Image 1: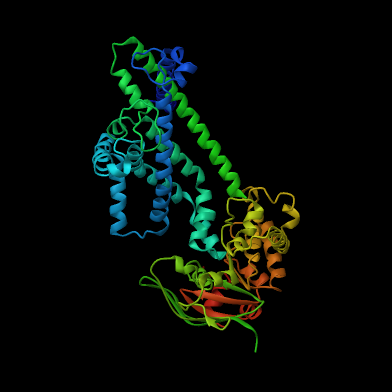
Image 2: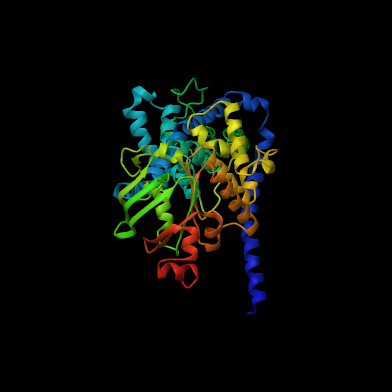
Length: 283
Length: 252
């Protein structure tokens, strides 16, 4: 076969592969929007859920989701940043750190329902006096444990890309290790850290199984982090499992629509905040 | 007796089992430029990095001997390494400005030492950039990111950044090897001006550069100092055969 023919076959494969991934994204989003948009209106956003289906809304689930996303990130981000800093800047390569790394790699591929079961036994059952049992806090702590490995790994990869001569330059100027980390290494790796957070956020929002077991299925408005709460995804699961009911199915699609919009908004918001921080750190 | 900045006595350095520096004895004169020459892997950069304790950052390094600096042995465990590095600045082979503004790069060191006053910082930045002959080129874009400068400008920024600490010594590790001839010439002119105020040590692969900029030259070979003399004498009348062979380009 001539080289030209080989080239065009390769190129063809690349085009087909790209087309499949873009088309499937468009198809899913389009399908959800087509079935869901008609049912999205202000009262759907601002009403509570009603079992009868009349004027039913998703406000409590929307708030519950926001609660869980924010609380989980609030706990997981600092822990993962400092863990990654420890692993990359301080830890020597010895048996203990190799075990830590092995554990992190292993935890990434543990099915989320296993985390749910673990969170259920620890946070919901044993620590019930502290967490309130089924609660936003229990759910967030469970999801924190679930997303920590992926956050730590992503952030550590970013730290690894910072050339060593940045650290040397800083030390040679009489900076301490802590100053070097906070003034050079963290600001330089900010975009990587933001990416890790967005990745983590995506996993939090899309997760439903562990939340069923830890945050509960209550469809009332959460009163705080000790309240049980239903997130959009668990709500979606609940609605979809009533498949024969047309009203429930319509609500499921509308909920999915809101879910997609919410992911886009949170993504943009995170990037905006990152830009703000970047400007401040720069000065 | 001449003013000696570093008095190096019986210095040995090991990376694990490998001995990288063998019984080095050197007296580095104050406010002079001392060039360290020799083929790759001869230990000249390693020696330079002992003077501001940058070898502390490398695992498995063992050092014995003594380097007298300001009446103290700077290799001693009691030495405040951070204070030492504010007195002994360093410029690296590849320009390595921080990915921040030009102003912040120069203000980095002083800020780490706790200087917060904006006027004071602005004054330090201006004098440092002027001393590094960079002020006129960048004074209108101090808030621009330093990564947008040319390689030669970046290296002068790194020199300005070192000067901002008001050091006594500036160590330069092949500072022009990544630069074009014009940028190199500018740096060499700068070294000539800076030696009035600072003691400068420069590692270089270029014999011409050593003879142009330095007062004293040390020739390193396989971890040993073969010859150390005034640059004039070493280049015109080398005492050792190896030195002669190296400076005439027969090996290295």
